[in-house]
Image (cartoon, rainbow over all chains, first blue to last red; front, side, top):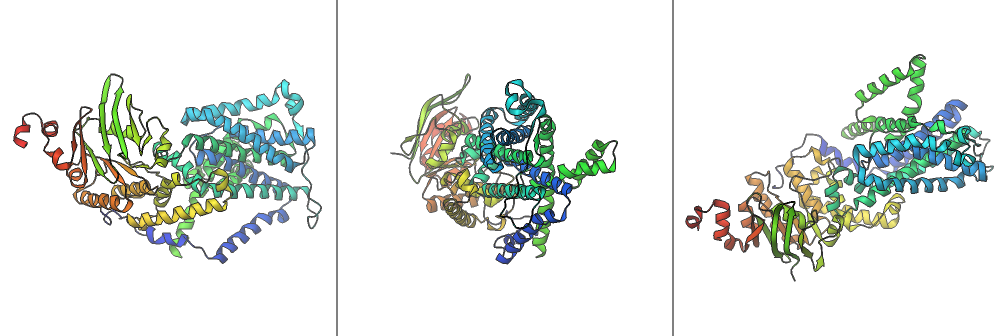
Length: 341
Length: 259
């Protein structure tokens, strides 16, 4: 255990590292500016339908981020996050269509409801863990569409028919005349942007390290003074909240909620998005959202008869080429740039 | 009052008595070695002290406070740091992140403060980062600071564990077989490191160890266990010449000659 003899590590990595610290201010500004352009431009380039699809992709990316917070970063497998997506969507739809709330007013309420329910699910999750937790959350996703159809709450949920609602209008002070589709896109990008930023802050600080430490080695995490039970239940709450907010956005973007839009498939889609984007990656979640929204369309364009087969092949090919998802690709590119620079 | 007081600790697993009423103290700024042949109950006793097991009888007091029965995550804030026998690092995280994770008990910023990057959270983070840097320098880990721990050799990973345990400024450092898996030269380095740590951090160390040579060289005091009972307790010289200890290690016939 003497000092130097064990520091033998494969060649180039150590020298490459210091470059990460202290990116010059103009570079940061450039990245931020570039990001803004990339985020805003589609609203003025794309036609109405592709823009709607991109809006939905951003929303799915946000929902995947929610799943990543608990499954990716904290290691609690959830196969039922579609339930929180549905809960958020219905919270917003009910408040808007029955009580005439504005969309913005429903957001904190929807987030709170999903957070509380997620927190509640977090407690049995403490005892279950691993595959058992996966099955339990899975059953939640199976139950939700049926609960939404149930007669006793039909007056509120609209039963099988669902509820119709209207996209929020662009506020009058906005320069130029934005169409509702353009405004909806900005709403989705804005809300998702805030959520991504908050999650990014959370993950790179004390709590994020504790979440990952708990995932990697629970006994050691406890020995470091981490209250793993509290961390896990709160991670579940945060996760449900983020996915619920995505659900709220989807309700207004689609202008309609119905039980059959929230089948088991939503939960599986979110899971696919998480793996494809990159498990335990913030930015990867956004790519996961783009993938699960656009790749099925590509599959359909290739073969109308068996889009599922093509989708499956694309998915396998993708995971074969990028086993760590998009996030792994990004990390590799960043590493190469750093070594060169 | 001693820093760590172990009193009449008994641990039974079903019908097996692993620890049968052991008492000993660790004073402040003392290095205490806990030795014994295989199956003597060292690791069980270690797990009782670190809060992993609850003793069937008896109690452990730390800095005058009752430690027995506290939840495991309350031990670190009391000033109890530890390393693990078979490395228990956070494998997906870098060396620096592992060490920072050790500072968890020092911090207060919760979910909200972190998500909003409140000034309090930022200050705390900056202080922890600075502290981590100094520990990485001390344990010669700067060159590998931003590499995932899983990619590093065993001896380096052990140093990472040490840094992770030290960052929370423990009053007592529990080390479970720190020399396990190290070669001769590395054990020499470890002995020096333990003495440096005791001096620089003004802490006590409780060392569970097979490596007799290391224990005898660094300890101020040695406690010997056999079949779950304490058979000797004293300075390294006293314990080494104790007939009970010689018998436990070398067998009954060897005792008269060896003594």
